[in-house]
Image (cartoon, rainbow, N blue to C red; front, side, top):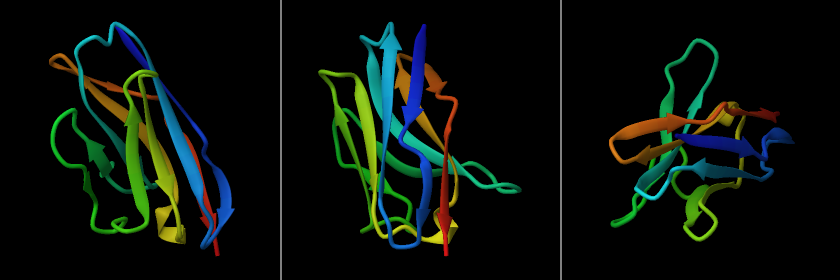
Amino acid sequence: QVQLVESGGGLVQAGGSLRLSCAASGTIFTMKAMAWYRQAPGKQRELVARIPTIGSTNYSDSVKGRFTISRDNAKNMVFLQMNSLKPEDTGVYYCNALVGTYLYWGQGTQVTVSS
């Protein structure tokens, strides 16, 4: 079983930065891709960024050039550096991981960007 715990969310002004962290624990020997999703009230959960074990990262068009996803395999962690934040980035951000053939989700962390 795998557990994912996010941290680093908060309230920031437009133009500011935040770094989200996600720590994985449990049976993670077969961890593959990791990703960040977000969800705003009344909207579908959407992919923000994804980082595979092999291959290039990919980003939502709305965050390209502003967000950077990275991972530390030794620490079993994935990060999301968010710069030049906009009010439309507001939402609950969720960590996601593919472990073997199963998808796991964290509880989410709130990010609020004020004007």
